[in-house]
Length: 124
Image (cartoon, rainbow, N blue to C red; front, side, top):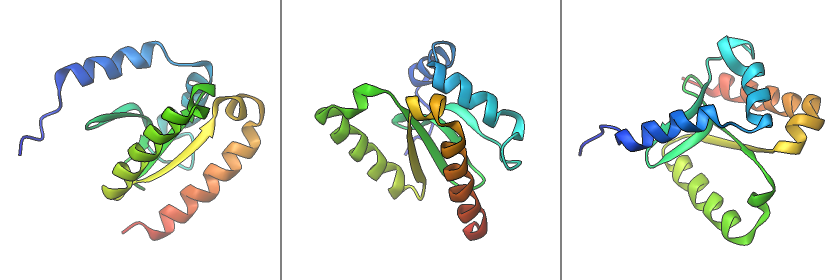
């Protein structure tokens, strides 16, 4: 099996970093350079065949930020399939709404702190 990443996927991920939503930019300011719990996060990280919003390899955590389109039935179904696939790789997926990241940051960070603490304690 060829594990080489698709160059188009890498280009698209780079483009997504430059066209991030306000919530993604804000969350990145909180997570980057090990600012959150001394964990290294990557943004718009390729996990073939997907691109995840944020990824921490150390604790196998994927963070997805969702806008209102994620409330539509077909997108809910797609997100569920995507989450199931990522979980088969041994990853934990957490999702937050964009409006919560921007308007209820303390609640989001408290939840994220709790989840990261649990994962840190169970990581090998």
